[in-house]
Length: 253
Image (cartoon, rainbow, N blue to C red):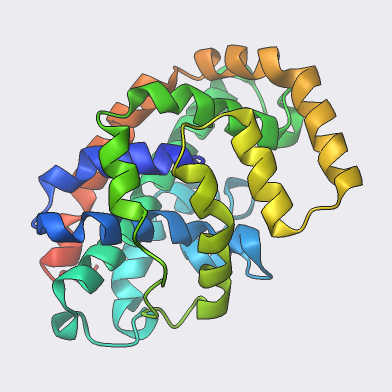
């Protein structure tokens, strides 16, 4: 999955393509973050993204996440789509856009694995968290107006309670943990701050820092080998822009 900071860059580019009011910008960006709440509680990725990982579900892991959301939308939402106000629709659209971006991420991962005869992520020579932190740092220069993104998110304290499949307490805790790090330019220290807010012990945090120091340069090499941040952003935004109209058109797959 793309890291949270990268999802914000995608959301920034995607928002102008959607039938949403400017006043809902923060709602949309927030929705694009909380889909990863499985990393902040006991939820499985299948609960939040409606598919498993590539090793579990194969091609469905990067082709059926959005389709499954559309099929189950009326049970995933606490209220009918037609009854949602503008901000609530934007929040749901952000969540859905996150799923679309993840589909692109997984599709690129499959292409990379096939090109290098890699059977699973465990065979990649860079730990996943180090790679994602480096990808976040590399994503920062791709913001078109980071100050506007931060300004849209800064006033948000409460996360809407709209979904039946994710506990509201979990998404609230997640937002409190990630908000400070995402309102400032992203560095490796931003990730360490999120871990500290999640309650990671000092011993674990020292181990994470050591792991990042060891693999940091290799992570940027791997990013380049996978095609780079700019290419991913372009493909993810294009896929999400092509997928999201189904949500607004009330299309059932």
